[in-house]
Image 1: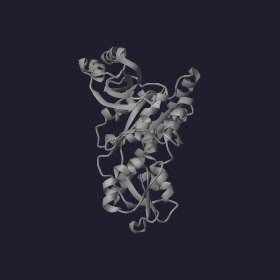
Image 2: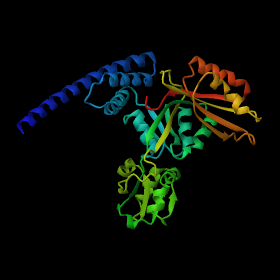
Image 3: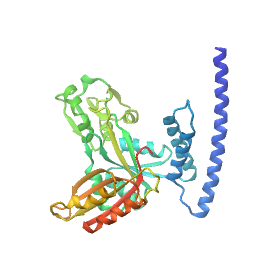
Image 4: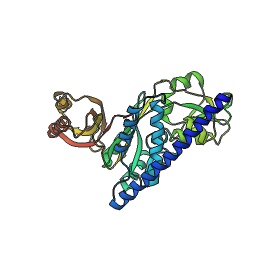
Length: 356
């Protein structure tokens, strides 16, 4: 035990040194904030944050794991920014939705988070300046695209600034944690779809009631003794619910992609994606012809989705994700070459691949 106590004393000494260095770092951050304020410069630089994390993970020789280092520095950078000027982040709420969790993962817990009742509210908040950034879901690996988010890009002149890939795990929660007491289940429709087989096998005959979000489902279940909710682990903590069953999603590789929206695009990093939307004249081979510049330029298209334009019958809007940045010569040229055949074309933004 004496040897352990000696090692613990060593840890305490290291912790004290870390604390001194953190406060030294914070002092420098405050001086940078003063200079930025005097020059009316922007406080938040996502590119600078990316560079810091990439530099440190490349220098790390272990045994401290890089994933933990990234998470630690995400919180450190978030706290440092809050000393300058806290970021205002709108997200599809309420508190404890998976979108909230994605926002926390990307911006850190020291940002000022603003829950919105619906996806349009997130776009409104960013467009009006109430928030600098917004976080919205765009697609799930098992259930596909969230069409309403795509529709919002038709109505708002906002850019995609980043994407967040979040592994989503659903849980059945209730006040008692007792499966036999459950008479109904509250759930957000996408969550219900992602747990369909489990529900059929384990909760047959129990009605599933629609909620506006997984967090709202948890809130409703927290007020009823015979109700349960499909929601996140964060929702269990926020609404004081117990686990009936954990990890009930049908696919154990259940990934949801979220978009960070703002008024500005992200600078080139070398590992980027670009998203565009366009409509074309309805004629045979029109889509093939319009996409041929990307084939010629050997640009990989990672996603193509179509939606009715809502402006004219049988007219469709196409959403395309491609590898590369709008500043890349071949990407810019390919988009220019497709303009002539488009009735409408909009560049939604260039941004780093999720996880960069």
